[in-house]
Length: 212
Image (cartoon, rainbow, N blue to C red; front, side, top):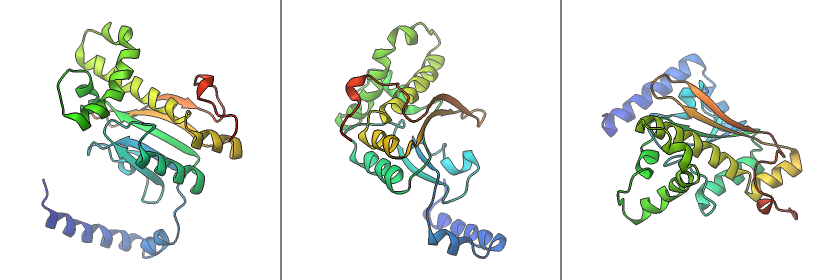
């Protein structure tokens, strides 16, 4: 692992490389931020949004947490969502998980990870419980974990639709589109799990607000 001084030196080299290709790169980047995408991804260091999508700084607005969860009490995530949707007016919100997710694997077991992490992983345990029949029909534990990763991404994408933020945006401007993807650590490829167009009915009516 690189020490912090090596990271600083690498930054200088990277900045110089960018300027050698485009002398106005940083001045243009500093003037405005108009990304089309909000990325809600896992904090795992092996899944960097820009690199795996071939995008450059400024193209994706990013929020990351353990196992790419959409938690209705998470003010951090919700503030990012509101800023991206209502102010940056992103056209797409992507929830991206990845196969081999440590958070998902941890949620499948019964280990005590102390209160804060237990509370966080409980969200994934709920996804497991709701899909127990399908999951426990998969005998290979790694394949079962991979399927839970996919089901978790689907659940989090649908939970975005339960927020008044997304519902209001759909009413005001018929956007953004919601996507659920899974990244493969072994092949570097993204797999689409779910795609939700503005206004599509994917949630129970009890979650739909009528006065926004």
